[in-house]
Amino acid sequence: MKVFSRRAALGTMLGLVATRGIAQGHGPIQVEAGWSRAAGAGRVGAGFLTLRNTGAADRLVSARTEIAGTVELHTHIHDNGVMRMRPVAAIELPAGETVTLRPGGLHLMLIDLKQPLNQGDTVPVTLVFEKAGEVRTQLAVQAAGARGPGATMPGGAMPGGSHRH
Image (cartoon, rainbow, N blue to C red; front, top):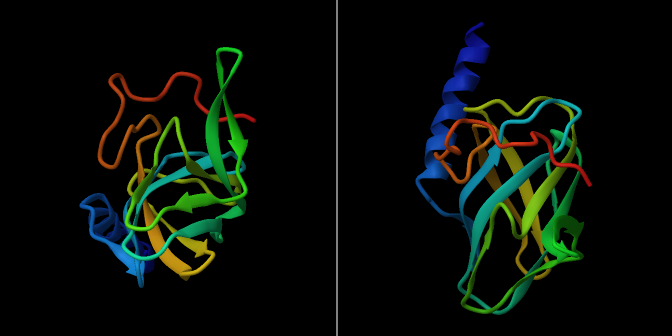
C-alpha cells in the first residue's frame, strides 16, 4: 500500500509540474504542458503538449510509451464536412517556432492502452526528433472531457466518449 501511495504522490507532483508549463527538453527542443485525458484499458488515448524549438528546423518523427501498444502522430482533417483523425509521418518544427499538439489538431494517439489512464496519473512518453534525438516527458492525465491541462468541459465528459478511427 505504501508503494502505491508513494507512486500516487509522485504522479500528482509530476502532474502539477506538467500543468504549470515547466519545460522539459533536450537541447533546442523544450516540451511544455504535456497532458492527456482519462481513458480505459484496451481503448485509445491521446497526448497533447507544446513543443518550443529554439534551434534549427527539426521534425518529431515518432513517440513511444510503455502503457500503449503503439503511439502514432495524428492530425484532424475535414473530409466532406466531417472531422476525421489521420496519421502523419512527422510533425514539422520550424526553426524558432512553437507547435502545440491539441484537441482538434495535431496530437499523439496512444493506441491499445495496456492500463487505464486515470485522472491524476502521469504517463511517461519518449518523443523522437529527427535531429534532437529522444526527449522524455510526462503527460498529466486530466478528466475524460478535458480541453486542456487542468481544464474540463462544462458538464463533465465529452459527448461520444472514445476516439475511433
